[in-house]
Image (cartoon, rainbow, N blue to C red; front, side, top):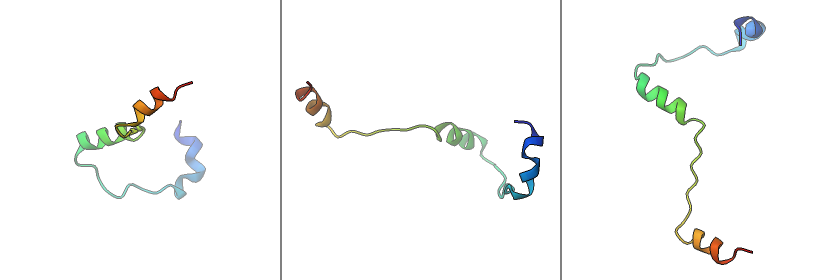
Length: 53
């Protein structure tokens, strides 16, 4: 999105407080931001197979 679309709200946008020093970790955190991991207990898969319609 071009800069001019945010121009009216520019004073309301917070400025960056800290300078990134570990870019590898920062990039990995951004990549994982949208990652959703779901954990199942051991017996859950067996329960679903036994009670399937």
